[in-house]
Image (tube, rainbow, N blue to C red; front, side):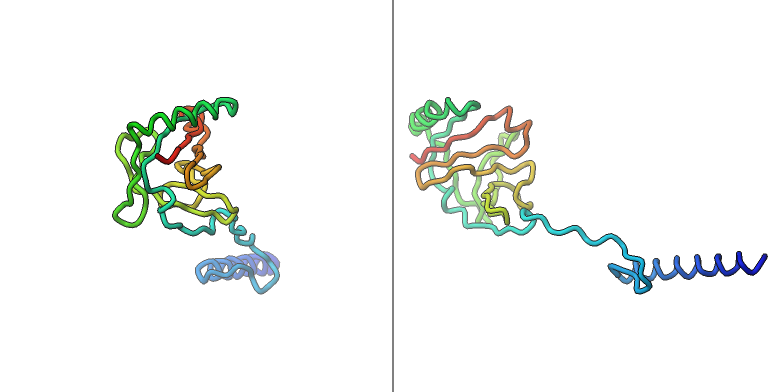
Length: 164
């Protein structure tokens, strides 16, 4: 083997060994100037906090709408449904027991505040998860939510909860 090929082969082997050592050691860059891709910056939704479920707990009249012009009628229907309210109770681990899309059984859900300032209701996952509902309006007597997942949102519409 000629000397030039041996030098190139040896340099390749050393570079591969350094890359492997760095990868195993968790380096983010090589000391000899070759920079690996940086870690992705955390998205605002990846930092969140779980809120107490108290604003959700209670008896609610529930209705839904698809077109914003139908919201007043949905709120009126939700108030009428207080005759047979939907009860949201506190769960065993301080969440809120609620139904989720496509499942007849209630599940314990968390009230989550995302780093982007939005509030969500859903499983223990970062806010904005496809299974979450985003709370688009909330007062002590009214909540308006929509599913994050576009398919679920189109099937279920925007939900209006009126406190009974």
